Amino acid sequence: MSSPDTAAVRRISSGGPYEDVIAYSRAVQLPNGLVLVSGCTAADAGGPYDQSVAAFGVAFKALAQAGLGPEDVVRTRMYLTHARDVDEVGRAHKELFDAVRPAATMLIVSGFVDPSMVVEVEVEAYKAVPA
Image: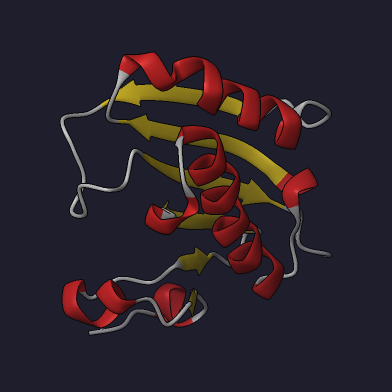
């Protein structure tokens, strides 16, 4: 059952293989200007730095579909499988967000669906809706 508020929510798909299997959207755009981007990965991108840059690139594509860009990011979450990768993931984050400085969280987790993944990122962005 859909309420009037949820009818205004826009769901953005990237066509990823798990979207239909798990029933999720790459991003959800709320009427108030907030965009929530689901966890993004890049298993085939190489090491932790490259996977981070590529995963944030997936998130940026979803934001672009919602009319937002990296400069609108207000929060990031980075999930890593190894503490040894903190510096490389942090370097990628700094390069992408040094001028933006979003609220950020970095967590060490036990693993991901695909064992070749070492990093997963989430992004939240906001752009005020014109009155």
